[in-house]
Image (cartoon, rainbow, N blue to C red; front, side, top):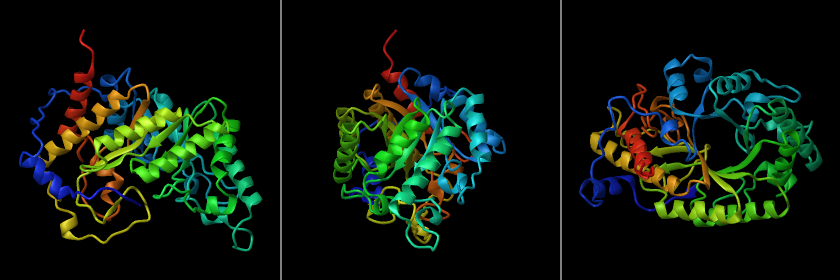
Length: 385
């Protein structure tokens, strides 16, 4: 959870629609939309998080969108600890193998998500034989065994790994997760070193949300600086990119990318979506433990997103991609967290059952005005022939 600005979505929309932001309406690119990966070729990889229905073909329309528009794929859940290593000595690689095979079949850069996280990790990982807290040596041994087994199995096939997820809290201090409480702050360095042992050629990423906020950003920058000074192999920092129409500001995002570039890492936008629904609390971010009861006023667009809001959303996407393009070379991948609005996790978080519109393709798989805006951003940034 993180404090994410004081301007509400309704206030922002009212200002923009009333002319508070003097910007022209966006127009469609063409009847036959261009490919995202073609539009951004030479700038950065364009990715999507894919679920098991996509990679198995059960959701063939979404699978076709992925094949046409994306050249990178992230496993949405198939490689998380609870999915792949549910019990001591028990591994289930079926969904992960299907994901990797899908990416290989279509020439995509596969990303493994995630090796070390305090969520979606079974309780047994942190317990001893009697149900009490595991000791430091025991947990380090489990960490090493898990990373060596999972990364080792896909050595040379999965090209990049989210090694550690969300190790910093909102104040900038190390998050007091079970990993940190039992092992200590050095669990992050250990995880990266174990991943490097398991695959010397894979890219290794630190991934977190809301590090556009200054206190958390400063803590994350300090963490990465310490790791690099110790020779820990961190390739890039992933900004999760669970954004809103009004947060972060472009200035916040710009300074965050620049801060990590100054430390010496690349930057990736790893889980991008843009929430258009009313803010539920004063906080934002992506704490999956947050849960709020559904109320009508929190779900205003059940019949569809009004055209006026589509335009505001499109402009937001254009502004974001314009910023990413200005940082090309530092920003090396932009990955959307999902394929269509229908399968976005934002429909259920933090309010289960809402109708959200955070991605570039609608529930029927058709490109939204935001898609056209992203294509336009690439064309406007392209050098003249």
